Amino acid sequence: MIQQLLAGKRVDLGFLDLDRDAATIAAWTEDPEYWNLYEREIGRPLSRSQVKKKFSADPRFAHQHFRFAIYQRPEHRLIGLASLEWVDWSNSNAALALAIGRPEDRGTGYEADALQALLQYAFHELNLYRLQASAFEYAVSWRQQLELAGFRLEVCRRREILRAGRRWDALIYGILRAEWQPATAGAEGAA
Image (cartoon, rainbow, N blue to C red; front, side, top):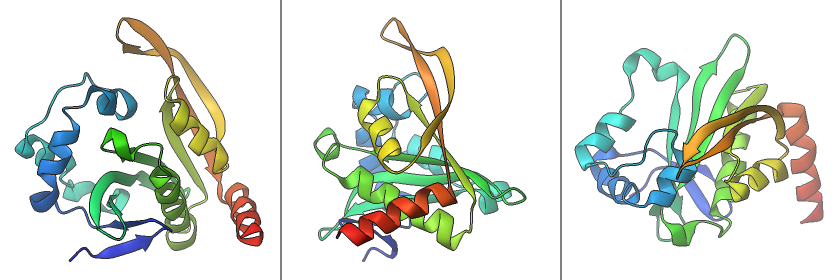
């Protein structure tokens, strides 16, 4: 049974069980598009043990990192990963990241639903004030999801990412709690 921590309309965000989920995540790393969309490092397949090592929480930073598995409802199939990283409790800031594993699950609305659940958690449960999210210039769908959620482009690190012999911009988006709440209230009123 999957333990649901956060619920969206079509997805649940729950505990990442690396004993159960490492094989699925390792399979995602065999897809070059996965690496190109979500990783800064050079793409390469990872084994189950490498996935476990990469995603294992360092106890020294446990209070600063919140990692979730994204499960599709109603089957509770693992479809992605979400996190709030480097939570700065003194200033109420954190970095948000989200990845959808299989190509057929991308662009289906799961990403937007998981993003809203994560924003709800960050702003209402953790009482954070500001979030940032990274995107690569060519990741148009992710950039659109961020902008639809209320994120604004704050930083463009020109030609920082090298992919397939071409340089791309690395983009940093930010959102304040007050910028997100009106968007949520408007969406609820329209429903």
